[in-house]
Amino acid sequence: MHLVKADVVVTSPDRNFVTLRLETDEGIVGLGDGTLNGRELAVVAYLQEHVVPLLIGRDAARIEDTWQFLYRSAYWRRGPVTMAAIAAVDTALWDIKGKAAEMPVYQLLGGASRNGLLAYGHASGKELPELFDSIREHQAQGYKAIRVQTGVPGLKSIYGIASNATYEANEGVRYDHEPAQRGDLPNEEDWDTRSYLRHVPTVFEAVRNEFGPELPLLHDAHHRLTPIQAAKLGKSLEPYDLFWLEDVTPAENQEALRLVRQHTTTPLAIGEIFNTVWDYQLIIREQLIDYVRSAVTHTGGITHLKKVLDYASQYQIKSGMHGPTDISPVGLAAQMHLGLAIHNFGIQEYMQHGERTDQVFEQSFTWQDGLLHPGDKPGLGVDLNLEEAAKYPYQRAYLPFNRLADGTVHDW
Ligand code: GCO
Ligand code: MG
Image (cartoon, rainbow, N blue to C red; front, top):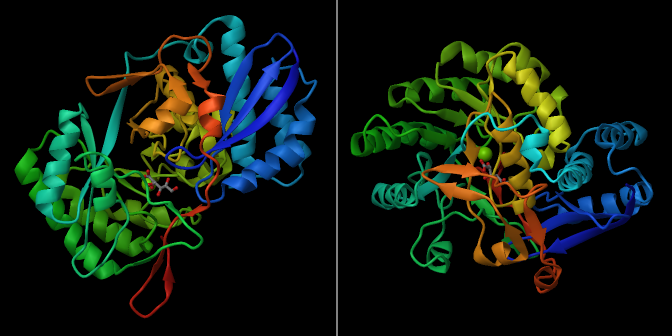
């Protein structure tokens, strides 16, 4: 079975998505997600100009060989654009293989290791009462694990807080649809680490007092701390028994986590901006983390992320795949299949896409009693409605950036 067609579909129903649509000479269609939030068109160009010409005529069954060919033949390796483009091809080939075998992809990966995937959602509020409402809303929707983000006194805007606009747009459900803003320039936010470090433990104390000790709670520091600040935060959150503390330091310095680890028993999750197993080499080998945050979409697809997770499994490190709304329904489905099959699944981030997105991408997963399941349709179980997709052309959008009070640019 050979590839005869490869189209890159860009659509922006609630946000921009990049989808690779492959077709074989037997008429089987496979989908892959290549969405890179805020830099979408770089992946589109990489695919259209450099990858699509290599795909036509290739044997659709040779997934590993195609992965190695795309990775090694480019000479230039790694990086988010390359790895998202390879992920799109890889995921679409798994989708085709599943459809050809008439099996859901998780069966091809070894079959289910569990009944469903524990998922966490994003609760947020500028102040505590709003945050408590948001936690209750998430519990009412069935979430059994919840990420908690709040405002910080003195700061105008901060990562992870659903705005009033999204609150209204979602008919009273406070939901953070991710802050990539459509527009010509990125929004500027402000940041102050000392205020943040003082404030966060008081939030978790209040949440534990209100909701008790059982509810698994997570928190994302979004790459903003130095190693010693991260160590201090982990230590100060120990009494509140977090499921994980995420992205405490900018992730490219793997050694930073040695210092953090020496000082705290709060579990650590990292890696949503990593793209390869080599970005994890030291932190997995030295057991400096507890959860791998990589997404199928940004880590070279199912083939490569499975290798990362197999490596992690030898050190009792589990998956915590990145699942904000900037992972498309195709990318999310791919990680549900992978998560269902591997033994070292930890938790799945699940933010929920908007209604328009669900019309563009027809999905077959289920979400019941706090557990996700990819469903049993052959392949990934997602169809792309091209007519709906065409209604929403690309719109430029940027993630925000941070400045400190003195004007210095800080990690966002
Ligand atoms: C998360 C992430 C996201 C990122 C976003 C950037 O934990 O879900 O940190 O919120 O900010 O994916 O595009
Ligand atoms: Mg994160």
